[in-house]
Length: 400
Ligand SMILES: Cc1cc2nc3c(=O)[nH]c(=O)nc-3n(C[C@H](O)[C@H](O)[C@H](O)COP(=O)(O)OP(=O)(O)OC[C@H]3O[C@@H](n4cnc5c(N)ncnc54)[C@H](O)[C@@H]3O)c2cc1C
Image 1 (cartoon, rainbow, N blue to C red):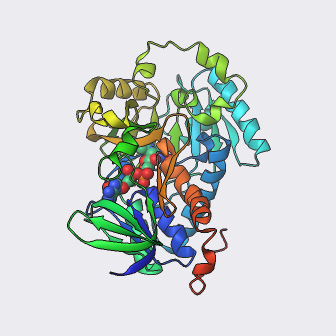
Image 2: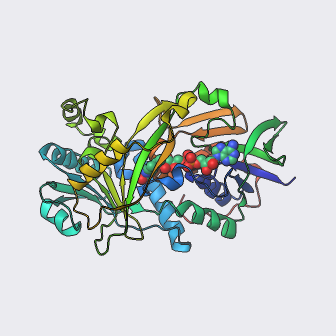
Image 3: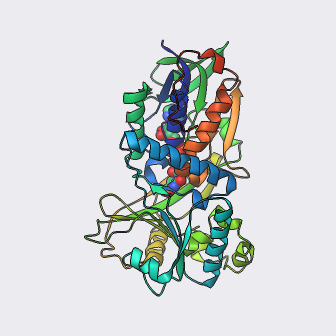
């Protein structure tokens, strides 16, 4: 059995960025994924990397993530495109929130600028003049193609950073043994490492089922739609609209947020299904539209069911059509994804033993915050043992 400094369980974006930072620290790392390729939240999302939507702590981590994504993209194509993020306001209240957020970001030294309605209409083809009152634009922000980004990132780590990658491998047991851990796969293979980080996403049953069932973790089901490619319509970057402005954490820091939220109709379909309307054009010209939010405690995640609720899809399409005139509304696919999140905290962290660390429940901010968060977490976990890896330190591309 090969002995690793670190084994990461889970090949989603959170596990993969933990591997990235551990490898850059010079550690001998293996990453284990139950499927032939990761196929959970990390490949089912929009691929919007939007620190502008996060609270102050996660905006900082998201801004660090931007740096890592861009640095990797310079060396290896992981599908990063820097087209910025726009928030579009549909009324004066939302415009006020945008102006307040612009002020907050000025004092945070994070680039953004207001757009007039005319500028939005010129920039975003098909945007409806009767919807848009103006916008706030964040030029530094990026998108990735969720259906390829993590696969390419893993490929990059395997080919250029000696990551040992074990797909098709479900881990069913982890046992501390003295200074080490013995990790058992369901097919009988065994792995040994000094430390283990479990980034299991919303898989609550394979490992530590009781711990997760008794935790404050939730599963969140999100519905998504994707049109056929638009023949010539081009929509750059991440496009977030009025309902998002009323939902994202960054806006909760704006002075007028509470008053605006208080006026909302709690019985509206948007509130009932947690719908806000976002658009992102994929590389093939199709437009991804979402999304909705339904919640269940980790112990009862199956209650979310496996059906797509057609009423939600219809509602999202109706709302989307109030914002954009797309050349084609025909759908090529719709799907749901599930991410885990933590009630009452930003992320779930639990140490099963001194050298077994669980990190999950990053919520709806995983594509945005994982790279920055994982850097800090790897530093924390290996702070005391850095002296044990004397020969393999390599520079971290001037990003630290
Ligand atoms: C529809 C949707 C849209 C979203 N849009 C965005 C967005 O635009 N921007 C953004 O920032 N975030 C977005 N998110 C959130 C983001 O996708 C998640 O936060 C992120 O993908 C979570 O990553 P993860 O690695 O924690 O979990 P996952 O992606 O669920 O990965 C966990 C991995 O662990 C593996 N695993 C679990 N247990 C085991 C085991 N015992 N053995 C082996 N392997 C195991 C699983 O197979 C899986 O591949 C969205 C999420 C969804 C669902």
